[in-house]
Each structure stands twice: as C-alpha cells, then as structure tokens.
Image (cartoon, rainbow, N blue to C red; front, side):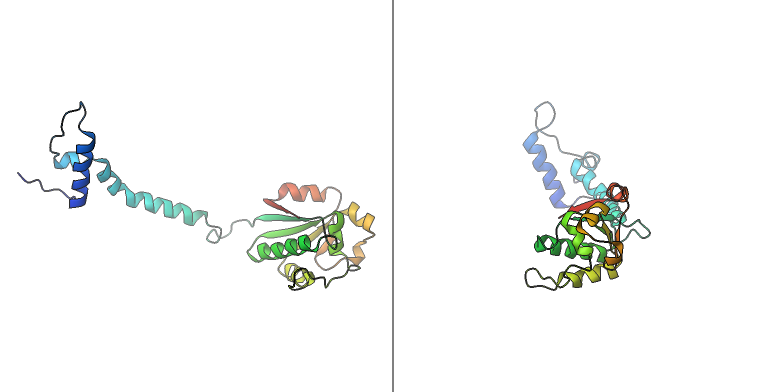
Length: 192
C-alpha cells in the first residue's frame, strides 16, 4: 500500500533515517509511519512554523531599527574630552567621532573639562592638525553646524582663564550641576 503524503522525498528519507538511527520507544524496530505520524514529526512541524518564525523575526528587527523608528527620541551621547594641545590625537578622535555621531542623528554634547576646555577657547590655536588630516577646527565647525554642542566645565574654565566671552561658537560654560545632569541623562558616554 502506498501512502499519499504532502512530503517531498528528502523529508521522508530524513524521517526514515532518524527512525532507523534512534529506533522506536522501547528499543524495537520502527514501524512504517502513516501520514498522520509523519505530520507530527519534528521536521514537518518545523517546516510549517518556519515561515511564521521568520516573519516574526524580520518584523522585530525592522521595528527595532533606529532608521525605521520614526519619531523615536534621539540618542543622547556625551563625548567627554579631557585633552587638547597636550594630546592632539585624543582631541582629533573626540571631535571626529562627535561629528560622525551627530551626522547620524544622535544628539551629541562634547563635555570639556581639564585641558579639554581649551578646545572651546578662542585664545587657543584653532588650526591644529594631528596625523596629516584636516585641522581639528574644520571638523569642530562642522560638528557645531550639524547641531552639536560643547559644554565647558565652569571650574576648569576658570582655572584656565577662559571667560564666556572667549568661547568658540557652539560652546558654553555650564552651571555647577549641569555637567552631572548631562552625564546622568546620556544614553552613551565616550571618554577621551
């Protein structure tokens, strides 16, 4: 007797191979399977639910994608910079990554303290270059033009002799608790 089932040859062979390999419950040899038994087989069940699982997985990836989640709040990123002329490599990387993240839609604030406050000062040289690329000031100007901000530590600015009238565009001296609040509100912090 030949059974008509909705299985292809490979599925039936896989079922037979599994049955021969593991035997039936109780250790005997496996009896031929009927269509009803084949429909309950794990491979058959998996074949039937695979499209549903694939669709659910694809939907969850698409929904969680930041590019597709319109109206979602922007990520708040703090780029903490503690260097300027004392470590141009750190300053260049901080400004470069701040610009990149701001351009990708994040809300980026450069938090400048220690020697990093000098980046915001108009009294400091602006055309400094590290590693043969563009001057740091060029990327800094693009960062500010894209909506990025610089928040300067008030204590460090005072010690460095930087007043609010001597700040580059996009920079401002923060209030005492403002730096702490910005850090606590950040989704991510990048430290240089």
